Length: 273
Image (cartoon, rainbow, N blue to C red; front, side, top):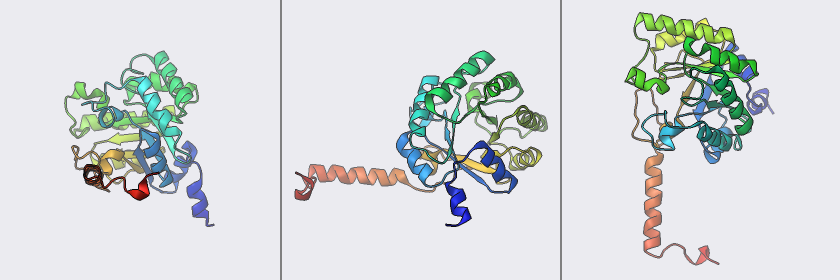
């Protein structure tokens, strides 16, 4: 067995992610929200799985990520961790579970870790949530930062447009990225910002930078699994590459099943007791 094969079977940890950045190995990350999908994604060799608050959209049908609750996120993360043996599982802290109250933020992060088995949490924001992140880190809970487009703040921004295009906002983002590294975050997600800025951030800090709509100059990429598999066809941003067309595959399979049931072709003699 080659060294590379052995390495690929090693459990992914925050320390291993740091090693990957140091040697220039790109990090592959996808979302998952349930046991079956997480098992498939993990067995394929993904490095990180994000139990995203995007579950609010793709699993519950909400227009934004805001409605999903802490209990619902813990449920989804619990399902995911039961299907994973290799990937590092990161759970989003949902809107309202950390903003403005660092003691509550710590208590909620502890709940996620204890009740779901996730190995890290992710929070959206920079300087304004520094105290919350620092308090969570005091408990030994790994924290992944998230800057750029922060969907939990959609009502503040009023648009999902590209962030940090202006010089002042770009400078603030760079400051926040360095701050998140300095206080102890193990990784950072950059969402929907100019590629040149994202690459500059990735080269300026030592922790892995994972991009979504942030170009190829960062240390890894993350996509929503339903988007990249073509299950959710209603979402087609510029940064999304579809690797399958499961919408069509599933529709055709279900249509075929309906036809077989209606025509009494299913079940046949070999499919009954």
